[in-house]
Length: 313
Image (cartoon, rainbow, N blue to C red):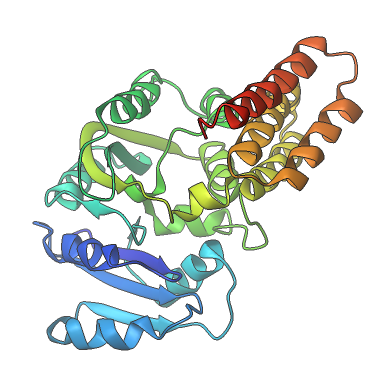
């Protein structure tokens, strides 16, 4: 019987964390243990959770960290405490469908050659309303990848340009994760991309074309609030992985340009103007003769300024 360790890192969680934990408890497949790691939140959330979930202490372990080290480090600390063959990940704002672990365990049993099974998702706002267009686009990107036939270098090249695996949907084999030394705990931003590039380079990845996860989108999502800073981390990962795997070298300029433009745009709409200047200077320094790239970044800036003048943002 396959058993799961479920990893839930916390940092200043909102009320949605209770829905997250409840969705784990509601799993049809019951061979799992949940590890909740608090990454030095401002308030002692673990005490509240231990009281609320007191009757499930045989299924849930709580770990309090003394200093904030980021989600990757928190995940690794929990992983080192566990021992089960499969590792699943969930984030503090997201929930699982009840059948998720059951269907993924069945997929691992059917195909012992795979080291990961991930799924589609649905995206909602903070009130639970389905964001249909965002959901459809996110899943379309995944469906466009031939997961059954792409592996090794081909799949790694695909994920390098655009990572389409949501960690909240993924389950990996413990042995496979440990063989690549897990997560890079020194990163803030790009840690997911870094992991899947290294993982796909070595292992086969399975895919279930089913929506088994709900990702809740709201104003306090770390991935939204800190997007420009996280893009800086992704730039570092893109460069380092292209150096490590020579078959990615030709893709590096493409990836870097994508990230630089995203950095300009995301910084503008979060009013992080120092970062706007930083990304724009990087474009001028690295690609001074790429007039398309320069023009597009300038268009982002002018479009933003016009919207500000018109009071649209």
